Amino acid sequence: MIPAAQVAKFSAALPFCLSFILIPLVWTGAVLGGWWIALTPLCAWYLFSAIDIAVGLNTENADLDTTEDQLFWYRLLTQVWVPLQALTLFGLVAYVSRATHLNGLEKFGVMFGTGVMTGTVGIVYAHELLHQRNRLERWLGDILLAMVLYSHFRSEHLLVHHRYVGTPRDPVTARYNEGFHRFYPRVLRQSLLSSFRAETAMLARRKLPWHHRSNPFWRYWALQGAMLALALGLGGWTGLVLFLVQAGVAIWQLEVVNYVEHYGLTRKHLGEGRYEHVLPRHSWNAEHRATNWLMINLQRHSDHHYKPDRRFPLLQTYPEHEAPQLPYGYPVMAIAAMIPPLWRRIMNPRVRAWRKRFYPEITDWKPYNRARTPLPR
Image 1 (tube, one colour):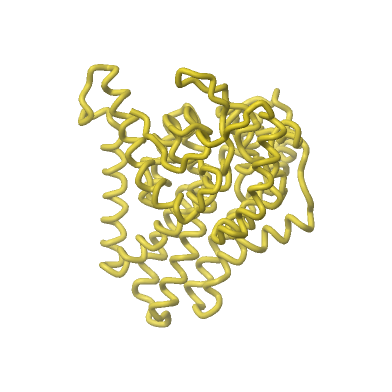
Image 2: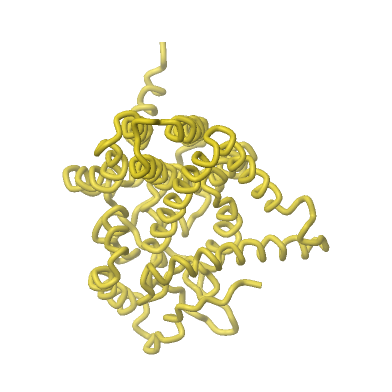
């Protein structure tokens, strides 16, 4: 008989299992075709936003004295997702590439939905795993990132983004008035370069060349090559194209979330290249309950940057006088980001209010508004 305490802990973690609903949804679209292929994006983008309206905000915070063993079910959740995503992704590559009941547009639609799954859930879970200190979880995170051909995200996120967030040296911090369609190609190019330079700099401090075997980019390239080879072996050239479609959609999902998380927020420059410490005020916070279930509290991004080592169930939320608040959850904000005039209408007044609240002494914001980002060297 399972102890009552374990049952209670499992029950507390259960809402975060809602993300697993995307797996049967992508398979439903693949098997039935037609309009069923729209199930996954409709669920991820609209259903959870509708549930947000129904269940309201969650302003409660977990007990920070919770021990690691009490988080067993939460840890298991992210680890179990890895083999399930692998089976789903490559199973779909093999199935869809041979599916005679699906036309070309439907096959694209199925893999678009798969990319919504690997981007909305897979990359978010990878983000949680790569922040952990043990090798198993970091390897699982690497595997998830390799499935979407974005392995360098680990180096970029840990060595560049968290260090330079809210400064011109962070490619991922979207500048004030920088539309997503300008941000996206810039961040694709600059994050790859900045992550490689960051790893090269770490090796140089140990007096090692960039091509030393300890450079994680060798692992990144090997894992991504294995994923591409597996897709080609399972589905031929069609399977490879389908795999690339889902990877592209997943990467787009990641970067639109990155755009939303930090748009217009900057750390105060203290002179001589120094900036203030990262605080909750330097990331947008969102308390929308259902979307936080789907994305394992990623919307509590203010606390994630303030305390990067906290596992997702322990991330705290903050009131408006401590952290800026998004008016809607990530799915709605991502849609708004696709329409720059609408985005500016929603967010620019909030950025200006944030500046007035936290930095009334700064009168010249031009140095903080640069859309061209110098890369770390």
